[in-house]
Structures are given as structure tokens and as C-alpha cells.
Amino acid sequence: MHKYNTIDEYIAQFSEEKQSILKKVRQIIRKNAPEATEKISYQMPSFWQDTNLIYFAAMKNHLGIYPTNSGITAFTHKLTEYKTSKGAIQIPWNKPIPYDLIAEITRFRVTQAKKGKT
Image (cartoon, rainbow, N blue to C red; front, side, top):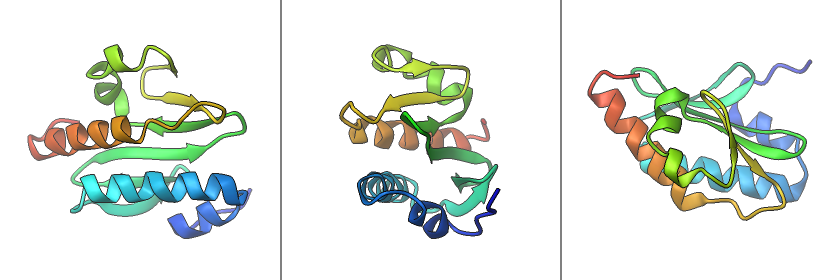
């Protein structure tokens, strides 16, 4: 398995269509978590601000958003059309990407990090 050192390296491996989506997700997270540090963790793009805020990854059939359990729990009512688990949201590639929701979840996670919650 290839080890990625940067988010740019990670994104570069995908088709142009998926690269476009991943770049937009990255841009939205950066805009809503401007103090966060980008890194690769578990071989996925991650944003860190005193704790892990959110990961994202391109899977075969979906875009994975990983905002920790608290990020899922707080938005359960807005995630009903997606498959979720304790810490993951699966957004099928054939559905519109909910960029506004990703922004909202990111802001929530930043607020939690500033309060010392994970």
C-alpha cells in the first residue's frame, strides 16, 4: 500500500471527477477550520486542532466523512439519507455532495475542540 505524506498526494491518485470533489471538500474544511493543521492520518486526509476534527476519504462507492462520534450524533437528524456508523458518514458518489452540511459539521467540531471536547 502506498503511503501518502500530503493531502495533495492523496488526492492526486483519483480520477479528475473525484479529485474535483475531494479538493472542494478540503477547501470547505479549510475555510471552516482555518486554524487546523492538515495531515495524513490512517492514510486519509485529516484536519487537526488540539484533536482530530475531521477526516475524509474517497472509497470505491462513496465519499467518507469521519467527524468522530460526536460529529455524527449532533447531526443525526440531517444524516438520515446517508449510511452512518459511530464515526463515519457514507455519501454515495451518485448523490449530490452536501458541502453545506460538511461545513456545518466542521464548524461544530472546531467549537468542540476549542472547548476541549473530542
